[in-house]
Length: 110
Image (cartoon, rainbow, N blue to C red; front, side, top):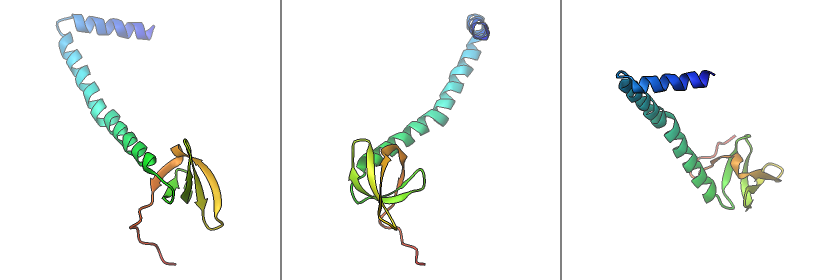
């Protein structure tokens, strides 16, 4: 019911002489929302996907659950990690990878 009333309102607004400004404003609002919300998210997703596709054995990663480990095997949709201090072996989904540790990061001394 509400949807049909909204569609009727849009049709009346578009067909009336004052409807052109309304449509221009709606197109402008959609364009703003696209460039503020949708496009940055797509860019972030593409960068993340490229990062995950470049991972190889020996890379140190952090998962979304906070687990840090070194990749010891790569499968189609998962990684096998070696997690210190007990050298525990875990299989995680590729979608759980949050970041890759850089080699140039200084190690903290205790």
